[in-house]
Amino acid sequence: MARILITSALPYINGIKHLGNLVGSQLPADLYARYMRARGHEVMFICATDEHGTPAEIAAAKAGKPVDEYCAEMHEVQAGLARGFAMSFDHFGRSSSQRNHVLTQHMAKTLGEAGLISEVSEEQVYSVADGRFLPDRYIEGTCPNCGYERARGDQCENCTKQLDPTDLINPRSAISGSTDLEVRETKHLFLRQSTLRDTLDEWIDSQTGWPVLTTSIAKKWLHDGDGLQDRGITRDLHWGVPAQFEGAPWSGMEGKVFYVWFDAPIEYIAATAEWADAQGLDDSAWERWWRTDKGADDVRYVEFMGKDNVPFHTLSFPATLIGSGEPWKLVDYIKSFNYLNYDGGQFSTSQGRGVFMDQALTILPADYWRWWLLSHAPESSDSEFTWENFQASVNKDLADVLGNLVSRVTKFCRSKFGEVVPGGGAWGPGEAALIAALSTRIRAYEGHMEAMEVRKSAGELRAIWVLGNEYLQEAAPWSTFKTDPEQAAAQIRLALNLIRLYAVLSQPFIPEAAARMMASMHCEDWSWPGDIGAALALLPEGHGFEVPEVLFAKITDEERADYAARFSGVRD
Image (cartoon, rainbow, N blue to C red; front, top):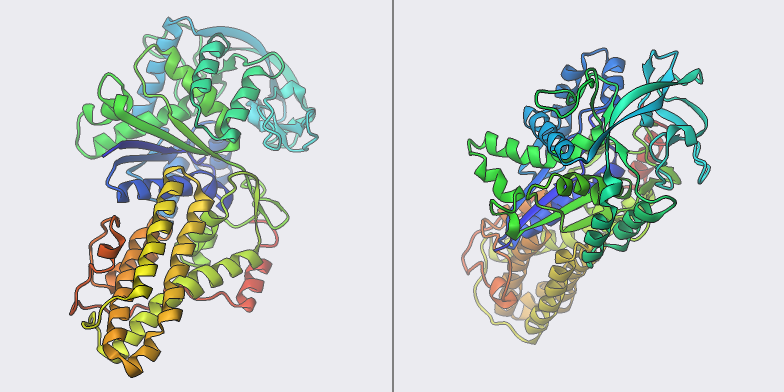
């Protein structure tokens, strides 16, 4: 049994996330966590809301609430939506937790004492209209690299180039839109990550199995232009982890907090500590996942994120952990994703464009969305959501292939043999051929899932479903029954066992439907199939079952047109 630590990029607190956010981190992470648990491994799956920084302050002000109250409410909303999409987090924490405050300040202190934090007086953009310094991400303008007109002052989300606010063409306040900006002097703490460039370079080179997307982004930040730059880790804000604290190896940082990109990844560790607290466990319970001197040396740590988060997880967060000089567990594999676009444009939280998690669940159950998003995950390139494609995928894959098999088998058995697994008959060449084909496909499915090849895994799972349909078409028990009821019973007995097998295999993708399939078979045996023949004989003669409600309803053309019209504009 392996021990696998899984973290998903933290969703920002400032609003409900869209489907592009979901498929870029949380959903594939959940797929992997569910699969690894199904294979008997010990899994710790951690996520949290990212609650600090200007986005939270602005969103709270817009809502007319104190920022701490706003964050508490939005955490509950996001946690509820995560449950709605069947996310199987072991803990869904908060970066504003006391655990994260203490740990972030501890990390900063150790880095400072190691000479890896410097105090820098610098000029920053001050918005006269807003009466405040503007954090980099709240200055917008045209990217000098690619021409994207809504680039932020820290990074262009279109081309991922790291920027300074002064690089932007026609800069403006993202808060008020004002162009009345001044450059004023202020003092900040900088992480001297440039001094760790060679160490980070060697470490990244040692990760030979990383996806090309992950490695190429990291290398670009390491070597393009002047190479990896030192990074400001404080901001002129009040909401966040205070940068001036007892024992800090610096002074004069009152009224400043740590930059959200410094404290947010540390929350992965802090959230695991929050999990231990919630379970009534001591620190050893979380330290065995995170400290190599406390047992984490045998942990495999996997991170899931969109490509815009890669630089911080390949460089800045590792620089924090390595630079601390303490035995923290470093990531072993980073699964990064491109963007999911929406109907000819981009999903956008800030612009309210696309389908958002709460809206999606009012239309259809979570499994419809989980299946489409995972089977179209933007792994090697950007992918695009269209209502036509969504309708076709749901109708063909879920309704016609999987749902139809479950319905046909259970209804036919009920009508001819009653609601029990029928006895009689024996397997023949057709059943042997199915078992051989399933064995090959299932081993391939396992290989893709182990490798986190999401789309290939979905394709293999669908092919496994298709094998069952092809077997039924060939065996035709409804015809066999007329001449050889015992042989038809053997075919249906196998088919009922096939439903249970499909529930086990499908659970990582469509957990709610899988649970209904398993319940309809009156079974609680979720053991992963080794010997496929044995798995298809698990439900014995006389075992009861019931005909489930329709697993997946087809989306009509009228419904598709209605959805497309409802989501053609932007969210209010």
